[in-house]
Length: 164
Image 1: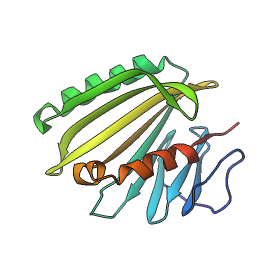
Image 2: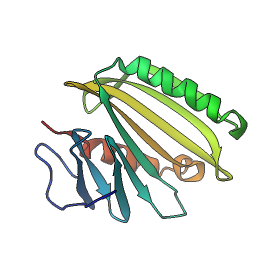
Image 3: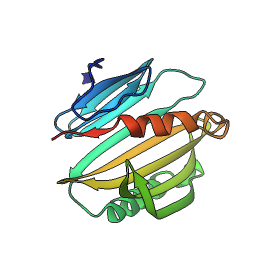
């Protein structure tokens, strides 16, 4: 189901320029939606997608009952590696010492071939109150390695807000 993006920020949200807000009350959070992106929700999961074929950039946010973020991330990595073994999946790094919005977090970075294009992904997992969140960002390697991601990742992180 498409989530309507609103110009008004959710309580506590800090939207960068050219972003609107989309709330997922089932997941307990609001995300920032860059101009020309659309947001869709399926239960506690939100997909923020661009139809721009140049960058093929997308975000996914998942909300879980409070679980250990490292256990969640390693489970996701194992399942993804199995599902994408034939897609030239490569784990680049996993880091137990990461921060997301100033909170302790864990990070997994990887590449694989998606729809014939080499794709770069980074997933962050962290706990906030009674929930654990994972935030996945992916884009074509040419966009990622060309510097486009240096803006999207911090802006999306800035705009993510757990709802009380």
